[in-house]
Length: 228
Image 1 (cartoon, helix red, strand yellow):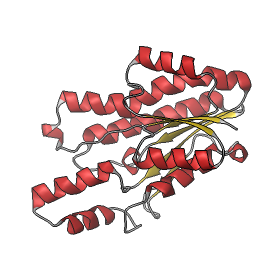
Image 2: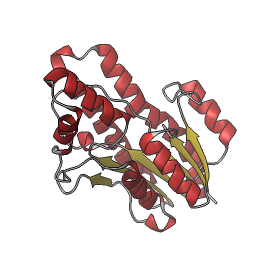
Image 3: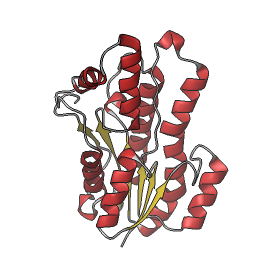
Image 4: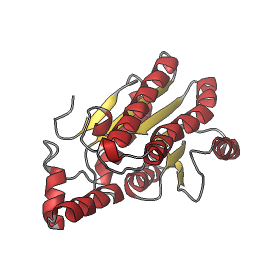
């Protein structure tokens, strides 16, 4: 039985990830905002000190908002970078020494296709997800040749609260119906539909598997064959 920590683990992709690991018999800590502010260095340090050794860390917590670059505020920029990038840094830094000492561990970042390509009206979000992927690669370089790996999944729009908010934004700005707004999101990738959270969870489970030790520094794109 492994000890698994999933940030943002109480809903959406995080809840699906936590459910998969629990079904496999692992001890899972699904963290929500009420459990720990992952952007607070002292809170993260204290949390992981209390938890003890962690075998799998899934950096899933994330937020998103959209605006043209000229209307993106500094507060929006900082908040999205804090949650989407700084949080993963603090949590990974907390668990990595123990993983390296035990020569065993898996770190998986839930990033986005927005972390691989630029998208309009997502300057803060896209740059934060690019930062998360860059962090993943840097960690992978540090742990190469050990029993620890660092990888990322990059899903397209997934049926979560973030996608629901995107649908509402499209409806408000364009007057489209919710159905048409969702179809517009779905058309952003060759998949032609929204991903389901469990599809992302499956990819996370694969990267965290004991037999996936040769997979390190990779970004697994889940969009039906678009982003390379």
